[in-house]
Length: 373
Image (cartoon, rainbow, N blue to C red):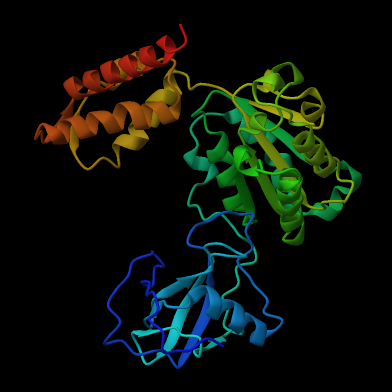
């Protein structure tokens, strides 16, 4: 073992590579830590760890955290096997001391707060979704199935495709569905399933379905599924995706039965999907742009939560926003007009602010369209 008398390079507890003076620092005799999980939410990561050999873990932890300053109630992060997994420092003796080669590191495993369902927390309900009556009606089969999976037998729904323009409520509907059914929702962007090395993607897809199956009944929602299941005529644009497509097909076919697991894919353009993947969806549900009455309802609902008063011609706004999605109306028009009013020290939102937002939105859209001309 190396001598403890050497000068250690000291790092702060957030593990940035910065040196600090250690002349007046004490070396830690004991550090007690507790696993607390990841600092961000990603459904394919398991929040739970199992320490099979505490002695080996102590050596592993001491080696990577050698020289770190430890303070009670701060955190240490693993940067080797499970990068960014966090451990809370419960005890540091003495406090504000430095981990050395002689520091004893103990881990508390019986206090891990387990979160088995990985549920996406949401307050959204089906009543919050304006329009899309056809889509809301069609997902009733999911509601009935997840309420009583056994009654469906071989007639259970498995794979459903949501398609429609961006901002029309595809993600919002699946969040509302999972929230009202009180089931785990595994919501992932398709691009997060793409690995850097051969086999990475298939492993990620398998782990996703395995986790959902372990916590069934549950819903898997793969947003922008065309990013990993592109039609073969377009695959030259992003290379070979056969590994991802084959893995996805295996899970969707249920070769390893994913009982009480619903897979919902979402795309802006269903015709861009690989035909083999598209054929696995029993139902394709279209999400349409809001009509005049629905846009009026969207505007009225959002105006109720505005921090400023308003004096607006709602019927005129309805006409001016024709062709826009619910998200565009909220984020691009109403929010921009609110910010414009605030930045100009206005006490109320007026049509002048709305017109500013509409003009800004048109300029941005024309810039995007002109990029490839």
